Image 1 (tube, rainbow, N blue to C red):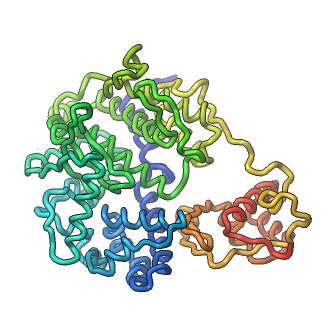
Image 2: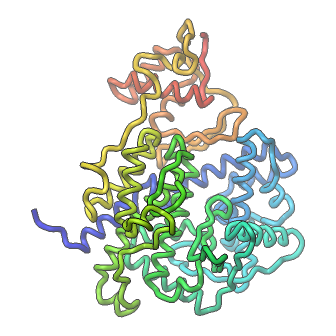
Image 3: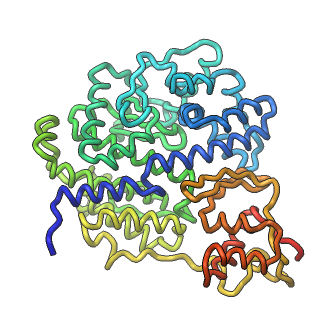
Amino acid sequence: MTAVPPDDLISRIDLALGSDPRFAGAPAIEARNLARYRLGLRILAGHHPHAADRLERLSRAGDDELRPVMYDPVLRNAFENDLTALEAGKGPTDALAGYLASGAADPAAGRLDGLGPCERLSRPHVRPWPRHAASWVWTDLDAGAGPQQALTARLEALLAGTLSKDGSGTRVTPDAALTAALGRAADLLTALLPRTGAGVLPHVSLVGFARYDNGEETLNSISGGDPLPSALFLAPERMDDPWTAAETLFHEGLHLKLFDVLRTGSLVADPDRLVPIPWRTRSWTLTRVLFAMHVYAHLLLFRAAAAEAGPGLRSRYGPPPATEDVDRATPGSEAAARGGYTTSLERVTYLARQAAEVHGGVLTAEGRAFVGWLIGAVTPLAPGILSEGGPVASPPAAVPAGMVAADAVAAGAEMEPRGYRQARPVQVCPIPEQRRLVAVSPGTSRFRWLNDHAWLIYALCDGRDLAALRAGYLRAAGQDADERLRLGLADLLSAGLIEPVGT
């Protein structure tokens, strides 16, 4: 077999890791998030009559108007808090509605200038990589007048809570040299990895600089996640070397990408399951394992691409780092005592085997596809990450074979329903180009993501009897699909999206 040239192999892996519409393609991930925002805004409008017109109008806005508002860290945090409260049954909160009703956030202004509410207050205004994404740098914020003051105060509070529990972290106002170094890091990252490198930048709304050192912990970088969405912060010292800066930007941008993926799908059925980590003293949740595995797999590609970097990149940015180590093991951990687990390869191998082989039974179907996509893409760089080709453990069948959908949800029912109809008032937002439908069942704010198979079954549930439903499904889905129909009906019924007719 002819060996694949290293640069061709790297390009192929970069394409595989940068283009998958489920887990990597920034435009597809954004389209799903915007659909979720549109549906969520309509739900919130039903709970807030004083701001219903603004919420409804924003839900119908074009992407150029909706995105700057909903990717603003303060407003995105408010939206998530509102929806979390509703889903938990705590009643409606009006964080997002309050910002819109007070005039602190004017969606129409975003359509005109493309700036989000907080970005509009930045002085000076800096976009570090305008060719790739509408990200902005936290330089200084004009405190604003009247309602805008609430935005600046809230952003500062979110940052303080993200940096440290005791509030001892400090934000650093960047000078021109620091913002130039940030742009230079992005230039290196996107030149090195045109797909995956450029693909993390659209997930970054806000990038800032900060310091935190309590004597035991020093901040290198941090991504905001849920408390400070779409934001990452870097220690200024990370900008001293372009390769370190590019790798750090890549690392935190990957976290933000996966946060966006998880906003529109679930990878783990038991996200709080704990997994021991040899290079740390505390166990991680399985969700955190997937986040770390995601980063370390991509860092394998980054380091391989850096090692093969041509003379043009080396003359412009200097030589890439020679070490394979990512960081030191935590004192007191197994790795600190026995050694090992210092490289991306060692860590991704451990994490992937834990996720796929030890705990694969609690991954969702999407989670198993995620592990297969991620590890399959980087295996040519490091064969053997998963044992003997990497079996991903499957969960037990959701519905025992031969049970009808009604039995799956209410075992012991004496009669099979005559048919099914869509529950009311289900709210939906279709994404036809991705063959997905997002729906919210009556009385909840929980989003259900239907693939084309589930969407077909949902569409067929118009009250017709089971014989007609089966006939319509088989015409569209093909033969030998009756079991899939029964399982799909059970899932939709348990989600509250359909209801039986004539039991």
